[in-house]
Length: 303
Ligand code: NAP
Figure 1: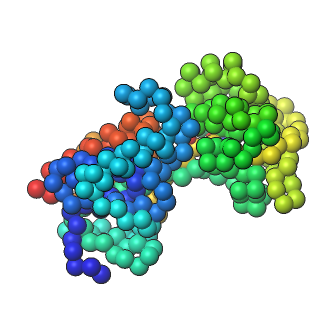
Figure 2 (figure 1 turned 90 degrees about the vertical axis):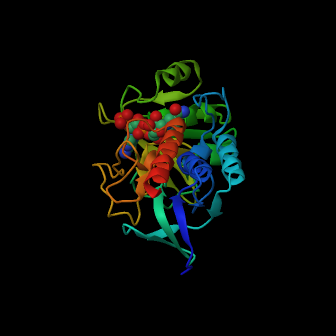
Figure 3 (figure 1 turned 60 degrees about the vertical axis):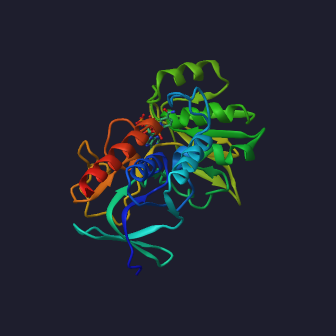
């Protein structure tokens, strides 16, 4: 173990973590961000971002990459590895990484975000990357001119369906109810798009040989089953928080970390920011806000 004690280790390089890094570094703290995947997290996979103030329209990757460059310019250090074990003692905390390194730090900001929820039906694993995708922006181009189905009725599902419709020959949207959870603007866009909605329905079977070719769709109102030939299913049914190794933190009924309005958790010197935290609105702008607030609380607490 390295003897150096950092001021703050930030877990996750999504909008919350990157903003926390910028604020912590500008506040005079030695800040290190750990990222086990790629910069930007889920936000970087957004095809279109139109509600981040000051930026009329962009894509998630460009916005997140700009935050990454800004944080590096502010002196934030990055370690690209996965945090696997936390010892969150009141004074010096340690964060063990999959690669074998252990970081010692006075404070930790958990900004680990959330991961896409799985359908939980047979063959989902088998067809992963062979006709099942959790990221339209990553995999959409592979299905140019093909038939695809998006599952879900939230903002992600609608964004994905409207994005895919421009590439695919046919795009279905399969939602378990007949009204959308997504913002009203997407409902309007859906009406004028070529996306074919299939309401009150869920996918009950995934079929194919080496890759997915057909799905079974069950109508929840009348119980009828129908087969649909598709080349890919894009699953967009929400997220689960990335809280591995964080059992010591108080969480809400859905597993999200509970904080006060300074982003402080139940443990001294441990903060949570962004999608991993229990909150009402999960957006890039609220993730950034959480990151700023967490860093500010951390600066004050370490004084
Ligand atoms: P979400 O808002 O939780 O929506 C999940 C959708 O999947 C819901 O329509 C839900 O149906 C459906 N669903 C959940 N479990 C299901 C299951 N087992 N089988 C079938 N359908 C299921 O998730 P999200 O769309 O990923 O969005 C997550 C957060 O990010 C939200 O707060 C959202 O506003 C935000 N976000 C914002 C933007 C933006 O503003 N540009 C873009 C993307 C995401 P029910 O409606 O019946 O519950």
